[in-house]
Image (cartoon, rainbow, N blue to C red):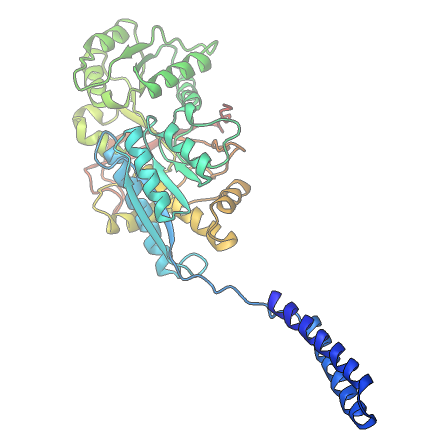
Length: 431
C-alpha cells in the first residue's frame, strides 16, 4: 500500500512539471506535452483508486493435536490406561472417517504420575506441542493444578474421575467434568438407593485425603433428616499399611445394612473382604472403580452379589455394547470401563467442535459450553453449567453378578453387571 501511494505521488509531480513545460514551449510542443500530461494524470488516478487483490489463507493440513493427561505409572494407572485407550480409539475412528473438518487428529500423551508438580511439567509440554484441548485427568490431587493451568492458558481441560470441588470456581470457563461429578454430588445416589431398598442404617468409611473428606461432607449434608442413620463416619488412613479391621468392626457393631466405601478408593478390596467376614451378606459400595480392577483384587466368591459401584456409563445399553466390542478389539484392556467411555467422548466432542469452529482453544471451549452431547455408552447427556460442572448427571448404580457376560463385552472374567438403579438428575455443585 505504501509503494502504490509513493508511485502516485511521483506521477502527480511528473504531470505538474509536464504542464509547466507546455506553457513555456511552442504550439506544436504544447499539444504533445498536454496529451502526455493528461495520460499521466489518468495513470495517477488509476494508481490511486486501485484496491489491493484479496488473498485467501491456505487451509491448514497440520494435524489437530489433543492432549491426554492421566496417571499411567502410579496409583490410578488402571483408570488412566482406560482413558488413554478410549481416546486412542476415537482418534483412529475419526481419522479413518476423514478427520475433524478434513484435518487428522493426533493424540499427545503425558503421564501425570498422580503428582501435581509432574502434572504441571506435563501440561507445559502439551502446550508447547500445540494441543487444542486436554483430557483424561483422574486424580483429585492433580485436578486443581490442571484446572488452574487450563484457565490461565485458556485451553479446555476435561476431567474423567477427579471429583474434588477445589478444581472449580464460578469463574471457571475452560474446565469440564465428564464422568465423576463433584464430591458434594456423589452421596445423593447412595442415599437414593438406600431409601429405595428401605435401609435405615448404613456404615460409612472414607480416606483421610481430599476425595474422602469431600465425600464425608456430602454424606453429612445429604443424609441429614433422611431417615437413614450412618452413625459415626470412619476416617481411615490410606494404604498400604492400613488395617481396616477396627473400622469395619465398628460398622458391624452398629448394625450396618450397607457399607458405603465410596470415599475410600484405595481400600476397596480390603473393605469388601472384611465386610463379608465381619458383617455378612450386605452390599459394599465402590469408588467409581473399573469393575475389572475391582474383581481382580476381590475374591469373586466375596464380590459376586455383594460388590456394588457407580458409573457414568450404562454397561447394559446397546450403544455401550457396540462401542465396547470395538474397544476390546482395539485395546489390550479386558473390559471397557466408564473411564474409557469418557476418553472416547472427550475426543469425539473436541473433534466436533474443531469441525464447527476451528482449532482455536477458546472457540472450542465456547462450543462445548453451548451444546449438549449424547455420547455412545453414556448414561446421561453431557452438558455443563457456566463453570463446567455436569449439568445433567444421572449415575448408574450396579452390582457385580455371576456371568456369563454378553458375548464380546467382558474378557476379564466370568461375571457381569446388573443395574440396580439410576439416580435422579443431580443438582450441580456450585463452587
